[in-house]
Length: 69
Image 1 (cartoon, helix red, strand yellow):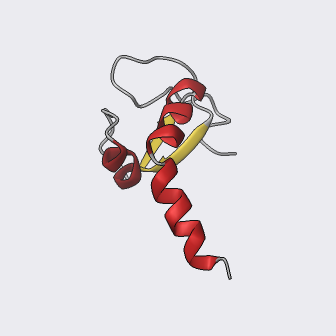
Image 2: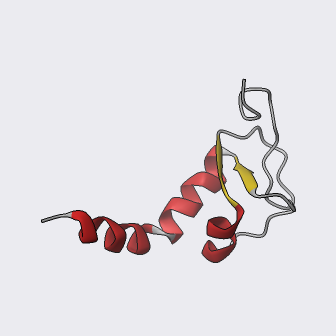
């Protein structure tokens, strides 16, 4: 059983919603979200995960383009 399924709260400052995803803290910090966690993993609720995906869309497209033939 992981921390997300155990009921961990969102790590973004000022948010208390239940987390739905866990992501590397470095990736989330690079996206510009303010997190209040000091560990390796950051837990995001549905709204903040959606915001993270919007902010990193271009980077993910470039990374995926490297693998396409």
